[in-house]
Length: 122
Image (cartoon, rainbow, N blue to C red; front, side, top):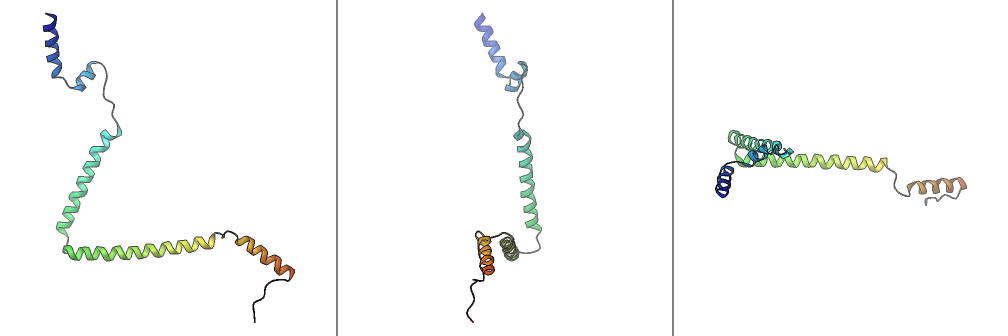
């Protein structure tokens, strides 16, 4: 009789989900950041893919022309970035003293004050 009662209870538990069991115990699942972020991220990626597909379908240029245009724009942007990086590097070089530069300046000052500065050949 006890065996039959336990089997009947086990059968009734088979239809319950883990959330039902946790609720019966007064517990619940802990929600993490991924529970909300994952569906949002997937929706974003799906929207991005749909937008890219629509843009390709409605583009006024052929695929070859579009690739050439993108390549030219990327090359121009790369040239601008290289030029800007070079300008910034030059500005940093001029703004920061080189190691030993102060010692060289001090040596030149002391030798010129003593009158023993080096002269260039005439």
